[in-house]
Amino acid sequence: HQDKFFKDRHYLDKEWGRYFTGSGEKVLLEVGCGAGNTIFPLLATYPDVFIHACDFSQRAISLVQSHKEYADTRIHAFVCDLTSGDMSNHVAPSSVDIVTMIFVLSAVSPERMPLVLQNIKKVLKPNGLVLFRDYATGDLAQERLTCKDQMISENFYVRGDGTVSSVNEFVDFVCCLCFYLFGLYNKLHTLLFRELSTFLKNT
Image: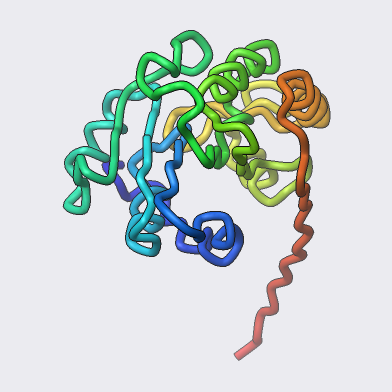
């Protein structure tokens, strides 16, 4: 799929833009950066942002590094599996203002979530922020995966890019519990409910 599987996430400016502005440079860590659909829109919008971008896939990192907007002065892209590797080998401890994780935690088994959050806690500054977005039980993404026969087992799916996703209340609970145990407290939790309706016109 190269870099065409997911669309660039330009909506982040509307939803999280207030966190990326302010005096001085902001240092971000994008976990599970994929082909760069989050980092390049952010770099284009916020000139004072430096981004560490990691993914467990060497192919994904190669796509990021070959992007026409890639520059070592603004991006540090590297391979890292947060469920087994040590993030502090790549990013200095207590140096990151904001960590972003978009549709990442659902791809991590609940028993490995503590390892991921432990890695994040190492590099996050005191009073730093973790911004994450993920699937909810019964949402449209889950319905689509079910309809396409991409379900491996109950609430466990394989996505079109070959990665897996777990969607259930237990994962939601474990995620929140792990954040709490590692001293990462919930500042804002938003559940967006949007109902889509399709109208067909008979011509």
